[in-house]
Length: 81
Image (cartoon, rainbow, N blue to C red; front, side, top):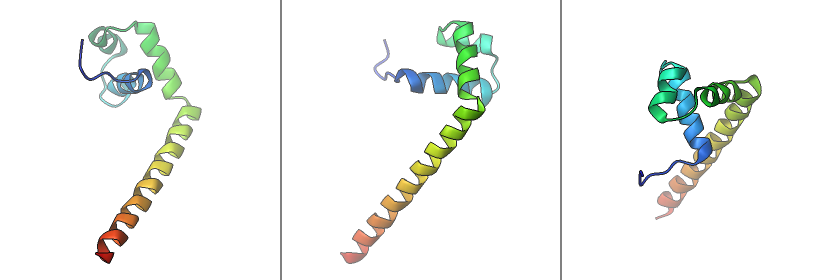
């Protein structure tokens, strides 16, 4: 068993990326990862739905905003020293 274990959602997202971003077939990806082909097909549908894309974009925007604020605070902190 691998020392690094992904959470279920992270695993699914990475599996979907193998299909949608890297261009691997669902069958090939499912076999390589040891998951059921229909499960992977459902994950692709779920994570690539318009609702999921909108939610992911919103989460990404929030993450970038938080990251930007954190960087600003670190710059301010380093400027005071």
